[in-house]
Image (cartoon, rainbow, N blue to C red; front, side, top):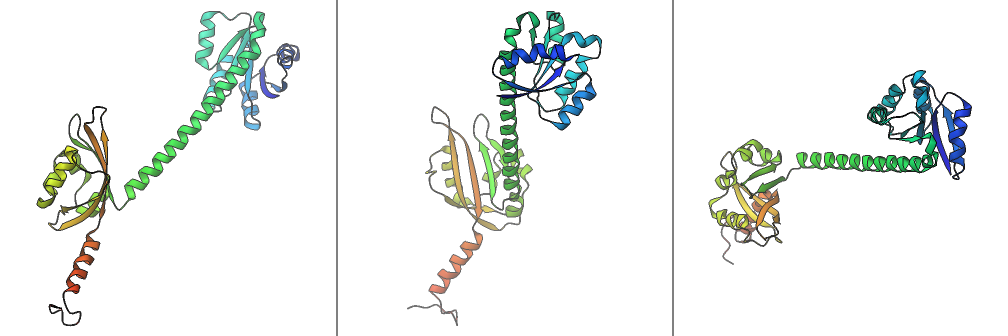
Length: 280
């Protein structure tokens, strides 16, 4: 099993102390000795590394804390393990705060490989979580971009604890002439612009007395006074007690379709040339 190690030691003899212990556990270490921040910077810019082992006694020769901080800030997540026979509890805390992930006493080197394996596992787990989070954020950005640019009106309306719009897409301006802020500041805004004959339908929806498996056609009043037809698909969210907590909906403008339906209905009873009523 290959393992790539940065060794913060002052000689090959010190390096062998750690390498022999690692080899005894079946690993084939590839290593590089680094003594300064520049050495570490050069190493991480050219190759990938699994772990860094640092001999604390070198603190008298250069600032180990600076190296730990540099690795921590590199965003590479290379685990750093301090190996020493002089680390006290207070110094161990300062080293870990600076960026060390763990420490092993030289008198107890039997812990070295298990600690290395643990910290490498932790680093890989953090890497997976980071990638998953980045993917989630990317999906969220994609979804928000999709919603923000959708022609349909997309919304979420909260009923508990206080009624109000949690979200409504900017497309409401294109479809109805109103701004999202008008919805956010007035929980009853939809009541004010819904066509009078459709108010009972809206009341049933908000009371939860509605078949949410089916879409519904409703009419809303545009800012300019025109009646706009929408087909609305609604997803309800109920509490454990069965109480309607919120709804999410997509309103698709079907005014063009309704206009076509009216035209076809008219033409079915009128002559296409004279537009006179066709009694037949």
